[in-house]
Image 1 (cartoon, rainbow, N blue to C red):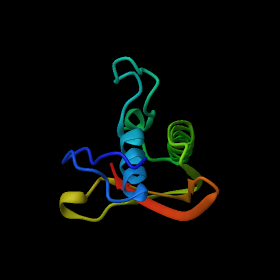
Image 2 (cartoon, rainbow, N blue to C red):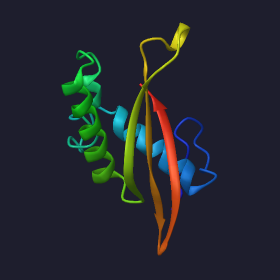
Image 3 (tube, rainbow, N blue to C red):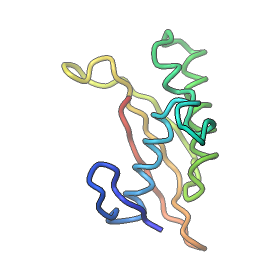
Length: 117
């Protein structure tokens, strides 16, 4: 199943495109915000305005891993990295890089995606 692109309604070109979109949706959706699926999403949106210290960073890593492992079975997560975005329009934003493997049947493929919050 490859699904569709949420912005255009067209079929996703590849499984990787659909998984990339799914991971972004999972980590950017606040818990309790989806009707009929209150446990979908992550606590990352709740952590965005917290002080960027070691405690918050650890909570961000854990929240990312837990949400992706729970809601995206086609992806096995192996690492998460957070980076500060550049300057200008992107200043103050966080880039999340998530690496692991895509699982399709008995085949696994290395996969990395980034998203900006």
